[in-house]
Structures are given as structure tokens and as C-alpha cells.
Length: 131
Image 1: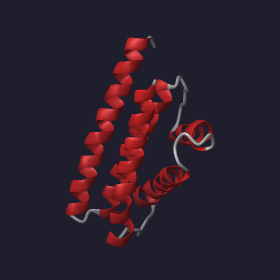
Image 2: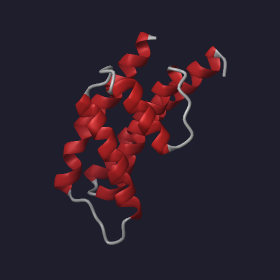
Image 3: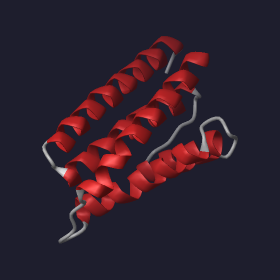
Image 4: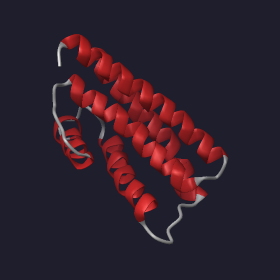
């Protein structure tokens, strides 16, 4: 991937992160808790994958994205620990909400995730702008 292709990909991923975050807000307004957690995870996932590509870090799976994000950005203090924990939790909760039988998130679980997810996406955007 040349620099222009990489820049276009990163821009696309950040746009997807924003769009997906907005969908999560709508789902929360409509009390669709499991779907909202899914969208919050994907909003952060799109931002994180954009950050990794921008930093020329290759991954092949969601687990790989999580691992590389932690090794290269959380562990080194580039993105704060709180946001790293949130990403890990969203990763786990998305799977639980999508694949767990007879499991439903509740308002008290989901609403508090909205602002920290916004913060994570904003931190990633700032880091990308530095390069």
C-alpha cells in the first residue's frame, strides 16, 4: 500500500468509526442495548485499525488488532490505560452480546460506555494527526 492508499484507507476507517458511533447513539436512544454495544465496539475497532495501518502495523484478525493496539499504543503510554481497558472490554462484550444465548445488556451497562468510546476515538484521531 503506497502512502496515498494508506492515507485514504485511514481516512475511510475514521469516517466509518464516526458513522458507527452515531448509529450506537441512536441504538442507545432506542434502548437496543446489545446492538449498541456491538456498534460501540465496531466504532472503536475502525478507529484502532486506522491507527494501526497509519503506523504500518499489519494484523489479520480482531484478536490481532487488539494485541497490536495494546503492545504498540497502550503499553507504550501513547493511548491511556483507561481507553485500553475500554477497548478490551468492548471486544469481550461484543462477543458476549452477539453470541451469548439468553444474554441481554441493560441500560446501566451500556450508557456509561458512550463517552469513554468517544474519548478513545478522539485520542486515536489526535495520534493519527501527529504523523
